[in-house]
Length: 353
Image 1 (cartoon, rainbow, N blue to C red):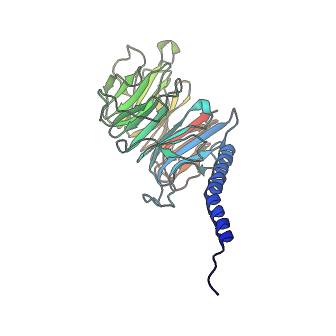
Image 2: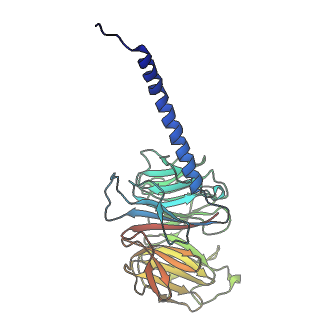
Image 3: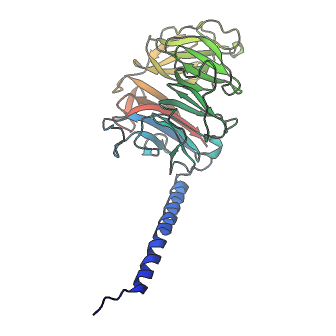
């Protein structure tokens, strides 16, 4: 019997084959939208983010890599992974007015952006931007996104779609951290050996003095001489590779001086403890500085790893991110594990939606 082709079956198969990609895309879009809806935070919620540089299982490109961006919505007690898994994560920020819908993460391979609460991500920079150490959203005008990289200061004026490395003192030079330590539109960048400030989105810069490995600035009320009067305008604390330096804020701030009573250590993080006090963390643990005394008191106690790279306040509880042992939270005069065991926690952020 001669072979007869079943044309009806072929047509049915063709229709099925043509429909499958569309059906798959529809299902994928539906699943993404559902996941984004589940990730959305209600108004008034407090969300914590942890950026993990690496874990003991770290291997570039490995599918099991437990690094990247993690999120907590229960006062930093439990965490789930939110961002890309196969990257070295350094920092993150969000468009606050979007209540967590628009997120940015700084990573070794560029700036990653999510517009659906972290359900999906894509790299919005090109080959010129690598080793992105920090990313920051201008909350006054979220079209402006800033990035500190090992190869210069970069900015975007359209929400991260296009980037430029503007000419000037920070063009091509090492930059580490971005901050807005005061009111208004002041932007501060920690460079290779000094801090720089700008009030025009990084088009021009003013040097703020020389430091050894500058890492960050914290403004507090109170100065190194023990004065706690807010009428003096307070002080600025400068995190450096040789400890914390302090100087009066404002145009007549003078030369920074070593913070009295505090160790000469690599300082990685500072956070206000209220009033004239601040927590300081680095490669010699956690210390509490009181400008009214003035003195530093060690708060490391039984923390498993004295190298602390990040700090955040969860209500009235201090949470520390360590270099290789995950998160710890202060409980009375001691510390207890608080997740992400074995991780190098590079950055901690608290967001109020």
